[in-house]
Length: 81
Image (cartoon, helix red, strand yellow):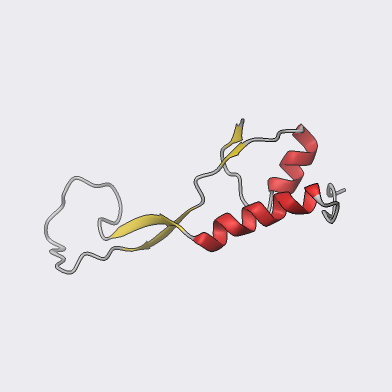
């Protein structure tokens, strides 16, 4: 299983170069926390922005799937030069 940095922009090349049929991608997107009360003077032990969170967007998953489907249906642009 191929993983690490897999995105819509590179999954076709990775699939074609490796012949892999299974992929792992977190597809996480940083977004603002839904936390209503924020005490900026208090640190809860988190590194970085305590008022941010990561989510997986449906459009990211669909984009990844669509890129793979283009290989299956023969509409992929192939490997870059």
